[in-house]
Image (tube, rainbow, N blue to C red; front, side, top):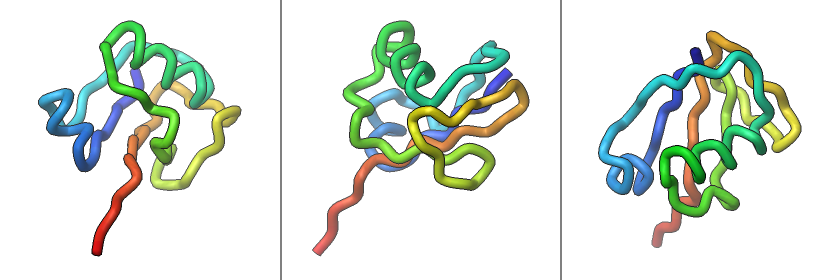
Length: 77
């Protein structure tokens, strides 16, 4: 089980701030594809990903029990 945390507009678009999915092991890239296809997520290409509070790269591996944060780009003025 992997816990997914959503931030900023992702929370609004999906309608929840967090949820869990049953995945034993996957890469960040594979998780993004799964979320787009299975859960109808918007484009996640520019979203930063953190695994257990540390920023991750596309090829990094996520394990069961990990917490993954999806952090979209933020603009401000």
